[in-house]
Every structure is written in structure tokens, then in C-alpha cells.
Image (cartoon, rainbow, N blue to C red; front, side, top):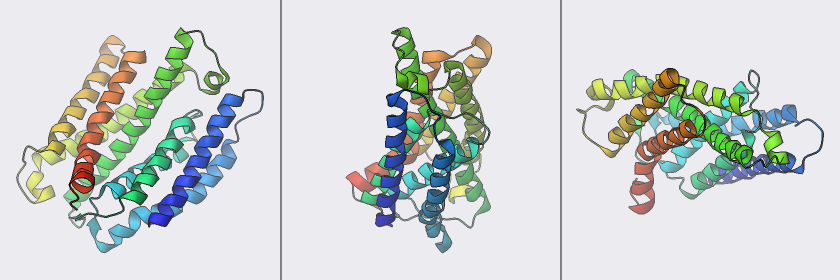
Length: 268
């Protein structure tokens, strides 16, 4: 699979490079979104092979390479589907470079890890809700970075061609909060199920681990953001920074432990 990850990384890197070139060059012309989505439609099935093939053996791999490839596939799939209903122009600037780096990491650390059996319906629901929430929060984090970039340029009165390529600030904020709200609902299912039904899901009582601590912490961060947005109209730079903090906690819970075990300690 390492060769496939490298090819996908080159493809995603090329799409990202084109998006940056188009955004920075200025001038007229519409972004060729239809052509981009056609290329992505051809890449996603190949990416899906790398994601779903290990599951045919009845186990969910635990390696960092698989975790990143699965998360990236879901984010790209959500972007592809969402592009038919929302204006997501500008998200390509960060999504494709992130995907390219993820594919490089997947190629460098392809070991699948020990994995978990996927025959348990409770475990399947826990994992599915968690992964979908992570992908939505990942998109929200990328939107947060775009908000910070656009906010900084507007405050400095620097209206560059790249800024003109991005959607309006209010549109980015609306998409960020919509992604967070959907992700929070799914994360609640995942975290709540893990806390209340740990023996049924993992086959052992709940224990205080790195993953559970950061999972609950990220839930609390996103709950606070959404509550303050609803009650005090939290938005802009502050909400974007806290959105990034929540995503960092999620990544420490999901990928952080895998990185320490597989890359630093060389365990699977």
C-alpha cells in the first residue's frame, strides 16, 4: 500500500499546488471546480481501497498510517459531497496539503498495528461516530485557519489576490460552526458510549487513559465554544483559536498515542 499512498500524496499535493497558484495569481476567470471534483472522484475510490481493504479481515487496524489515511479519506469525501451544496472555495488551500502530508505519513508508517475486532455492533457504532466527528472537526479546524488568515489580512488592510480567492469571513464562520455542531453531536455519541458502555465496546471496564482524558477534554472544549456562540455570540478570531485547540486535543487522543507507540516506542 505504500506505493499507493505515495501516488495519492503526489496527486493531492498537485491539487493543492494548483489551488495555491490559482489563488495567488489574481486576474479573472473562475476556479475550475468541476474539473477538480472529477479528479477527486477518480482518486477517492483508490484511496478507499487502502482504507477498506484491512477491514475485510474483520479487524480495525490501530496503526498511525491507517488512522491518518482513514481520517483524510473521510475529510476529502465530506468535502467532495459538500461542494455540491455549499461554496467551499478556499478550503482546497489547506485540505489538499494536509491530505498530501497524511499520505506521506501513511507511506512511512504503513504497519497496521494489532487492531480490534469489528464484529461488535457497539464498537462499530463507537468507531463510526468518532471517525465522522473527527473528520468534521478536521474540516472545522481548516476553516478556522482560513478565518485567522483572512481576519489578519483584513485587519492589516492587505487585500491580496489570495484573500480575494477566499469566501467572505461570515461564510467561513457559518461553515465552521455548522461543521462543529454536526461533529459535536457525533462526538457526544462516541464519548458517551465509551464512558457508559466500555465493557460492551472494548471488552473491559473504563480506565483512565491518555485517549479517554483527551477525548473528554475535547468534548468539553467544543461544548464551551458552541454554548458561548449561542449565548454570547462568540465568533471570529477567538472562536477559531478555540476550535483549533479542540482539534489538537482530538488528535492527541486519536493519533497521539498511536504516534508514541508505533513511531517512538516501535510497538504495534
